Structure formats: C-alpha cells, structure tokens
Image (cartoon, rainbow, N blue to C red; front, top):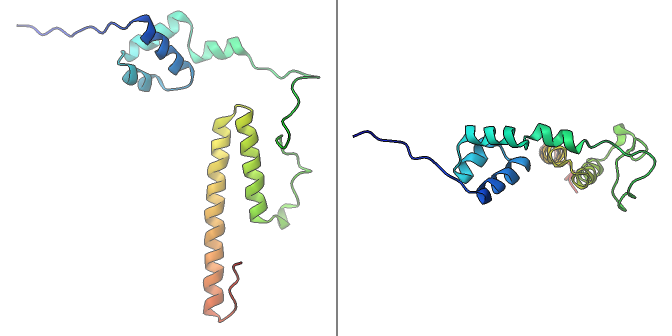
Length: 150
C-alpha cells in the first residue's frame, strides 16, 4: 500500500495572520512553522499577492518631509555634537545616560534594531566600567590605600 502525503489546506484567516506576521518582520521559516504552512507555499503566495518586504517598502517609500512635520516630543530628539561634552572628560555615567537617551529616541522614531544595538553597547560599557572600578578597588586595597569606589 502506498503512502500519500497529506495536503495542507489553510483558510483565508490563517493566510491573513501569516501575511501580518511576515510583513511585520518575522522570518519566513518561523512564520511557516508557527502557522503550519509550507515555506515554499508562503514565499510563492507572498510573491503572487505582492506582500514581500521589498514591495511593501517600495510602496511606503519613507522619505523625509522638508519644511514641516510633527513637533519633536519634549525631552527626546537626535543628539547633536553640541549636546556631547569633550570626549576626553566624558564621565562614564553621562555616556551611558546619553546612549540610553539616544536609544529611547530611536525607538520613538521606529528604529528599534538600532536602539537594540545601542542598548547592547550600553550594557557592554557598563560591564567594562564595573570591571575597571573593581580592578581599581583591588589595586587600592593591595597598596593599603583608601577605597577608590564611591
């Protein structure tokens, strides 16, 4: 007796959810697994119906509007070089605060991936700062000096 592979039939509601998840940025293999649809079927349907990310980006075509637009939200905005003090005297706490401020602004602008990368950099900076403070404290305690950390 031969074994025939069962075909998967998904209704329009399922495909609407697949489209929404795919367009939102989830990877095609992940969407295919989550909604139990074939990967090649998902890609074929996306191409045929025009909901590939490239086509959607072309349709949206986010270009800056000159001479107008929304007022920036209070407290948030892009950093300028005037906002940043001289790098040679930059306090690590201030650097972390500036980076978190920038990450918050990026999220508000819809640039979450850049904000995430910046937040990871902040975490790395905090770890390095803590390690440097620990080394300084150990050095001071070996020499009999006072505790350098505050």
